Length: 213
Ligand code: SAM
Image 1 (tube, rainbow, N blue to C red):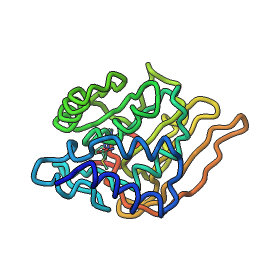
Image 2 (image 1 turned 90 degrees about the vertical axis):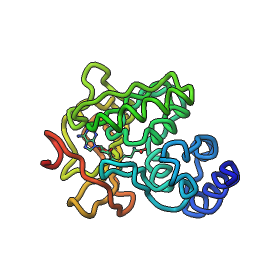
Image 3 (image 1 turned 45 degrees about the horizontal axis):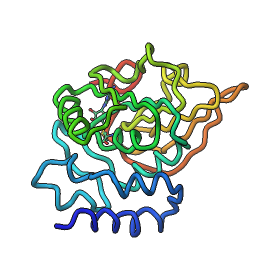
Image 4 (image 1 turned 135 degrees about the vertical axis):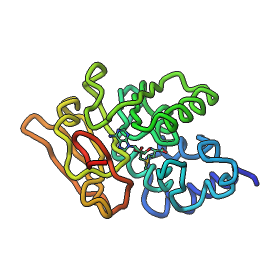
């Protein structure tokens, strides 16, 4: 399979027609080899218009969802970004292309270790992955210009908005365990401004300020 051609088709057929138009986001999506973040048997499907399993009952998100969430962070290249839910490491690699430093938290050790390896093989030096409950954020590295939560929460955790810079953006799917709304939050001087982006379905965010086990 020609993965480069498949990746360009993914951008041209799935992202641009749905309104993703930030050039830096589109070029990161054209560049990062998504197929290396899934197991070999699934590589032929890596550029399809869907999420795929990555083991431990978790998923690598649909390409469009990755692009939409990334675009919502409004990254220009100088930012420090926190990701909750490293999963395969694919979203972290996209963020690494678009920001100065990425901190990513995964609660399942086997996934975090595998993601770390792929990120290292691809040569990204600006991604730190830690095994932890991401609902608590990453206090020592805060505040962040952007926070992206790639698992679904019952509410927006205050622990995370507290770690957002003034003017910073947070994207998070909020709703029930089975159906959510993707929300963009901007931290302003006089409070949090919340904008719904789309309906979505993510695996649950499990932790102190997420769902129970
Ligand atoms: N961003 C990932 C990627 O690019 O492959 C996809 C993430 S997957 C949809 C959601 C991930 O969130 C899972 O790997 C899950 O284990 C993780 N997760 C759930 N609750 C978490 C928590 N409290 N802290 C950190 N990671 C969590």
